[in-house]
Image 1 (cartoon, helix red, strand yellow):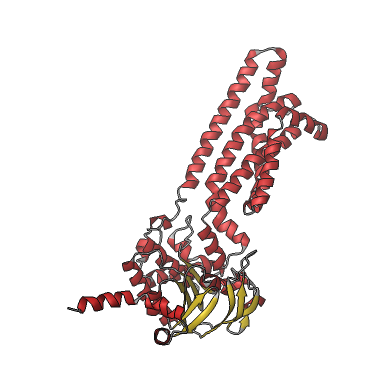
Image 2: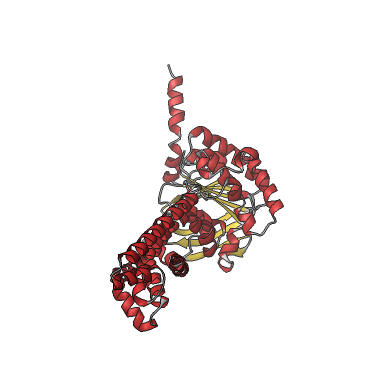
Length: 258
Length: 199
């Protein structure tokens, strides 16, 4: 099971009636199985860039290719069923239980009942939720962390070759967040799923990503490995974004001094 | 019994009204302008005095149950459409976004996510419309539509209190009965509607 390649070729997107471009001439080639973190402040265009991939946001200019195929030529509804999508608010369907939520895309794809049931149990175990205890629960009966785990399970249920995540762990407390980060990393690594992960948390990006794409005002300022971003920031902006982390290092250093 | 004929007329009109109100309501729910125009027009229709509308309809479709049927369908639209719009609008935008992003077509999103969640509000609208229509249908007595209205109308014309009271009591009982039954249905549809709250 390997992931898809995703290529942004001079992609620009604008919200209707807006004066500014939300995504401005973005070019980026994501290799199969790569984990790319999209990092930047609010309004930098990272979520918009993410949503151009599954065509929730239309492109004004340029194109996006998945496995070399221009997405503009594909049926968006069908295409989306092959791309996992997980958002911060999770968006679990309130009137369906956990099992039905996870089963959504497989059922849209016409899998038979037995295959769906088996896959639901498999996904629940993957996200460390005991199927016997969680299958029949309603979203309202889940904690934030449990809900997000179900969201991830739902996004991965139909063997997508690409996964889009928009700040999925942003609303969770630190302990739960760290656990989920580790688990997600392992899951997508093993499955080889190409992952685009939006976050405003630079720590998270350093932890998870093969490469980090820093965005500002709709443009990609730099896309490089965590090491290169720290050692060779492309601009002051990038340097300062990641220097904020130094607060912890500085305090630690101070504590060590006599 | 007359009560059954009365209920049958109301039920038929309600079913017909729903088949119009549901798609119409879903269609205008997303669009701010469309919904205010749509609801505005229906609201205006709603304020037309029922007897006047009935008289107008008799000119068009003649006497009997037909004009009452049409009048009921028209009056029901306002309440039904308003509740369909409210119900659909109340669906969590994150769920709509997730549904779209996962690869549901617009129709699938409406059928699998929005309408099931809008159901309690829609059933509430059906309840309100049904009760109003039971009362309204009694006007059928004036145009030979049958039902409890004819009983009331006979009593009215012959100055017999008995018929008036009998017809009115049965109509009221029907209305209360339907209200109770639909309230239970509403409560049933509400059991699964708690929205996920962030921890």
